[in-house]
Image (cartoon, rainbow, N blue to C red; front, side):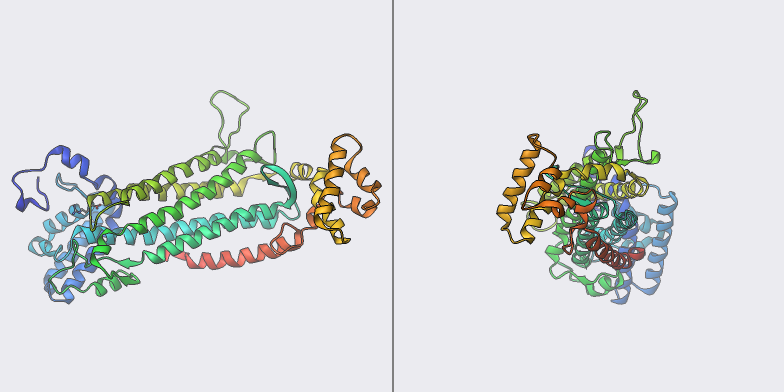
Length: 462
Ligand code: ARG
């Protein structure tokens, strides 16, 4: 077996060592980025005179062919290919001969893998952000179509005040807007090229890290070679941004589970986005929503695992850092699948607005409006709260309906009783950003404008 380091070693590495330490099984996903990094590296080597024109052409041609073999599935792994970097270099050297052996000039896998992973993150985080924007636009369209439908707004999962369905849906939408921002921020911060840092200290050769950074489209190059090869806070930060998306999906998922239960009945899933039971013929289950709830746990595991790996690591590169990839890949895959599945679910779900309204029309839902009616007449809020609280208690004690008690109360009367008419309370929420019709209409437009900006930002995975 041939290895990159065989010059210093007697004999082959143990099979157990390769089995435990090889990363080719998963880092093959970095192949396109590794090829891109290598192209930029050799072009720079050519420009600074470390590679003759002819050698450069040979290496670039070998990289092209290797890229094709990887894309078509014709690439054959050799026993010593412990990771994708090794595999590609080995193949380029086979194809380009002595020129290929110059590919790794002034470069270490330490700066190489960091470069690959940053390129990968730039692309993937933009793609995920675009998927999140697509889910947000589903929420927006459902909100815009929801008109004046309303449902109870809950605190402590107890009915609190009626809110427009549009308002409820956009609450999830705004949370996702912050996720898009976080993904963009994480992406902007990691947009720094580590290429040229070498193994730990840079090189005695006339490398030009600014050149490779510009060639690869990075916004900047590293400032410190030791930091460049050992920084993985960009992975932790990407994982946090992804985990937060997963947590937001889990909150939406939990509401879908509740809303589609027979007990609540606020929504009905489309058959394409529900599952059946193997035993119970009547069942229609919200498995996407449940898994959205569950997978947040898995993402939290990926994030905390990564943080634990980084904690206490001495400078600079340590093999521990190889453990950055699987949690990141898994988080990206799960968030992508989850966001897309939730977008489909939310597009096709039917809202049972009559059931929602009936739940929100319970007279006690207007209790705050009654208290605010008294406040508008000059009563201090704390006193008004006590007056209405007393009426609610008396009605619960069987003294009469809340409407009758309100009507009979000299401090309240006919006008106040009107507030108990179904559909009226939600119209009374006039605060900007509040749950009433006017405010929500304005909110929908603000959300739409924000979404258009974000959609343009992540168009074609820029
Ligand atoms: N597969 C390794 C990783 O993911 C590449 C770097 C190996 N470097 C080394 N000095 N052994 O980190």
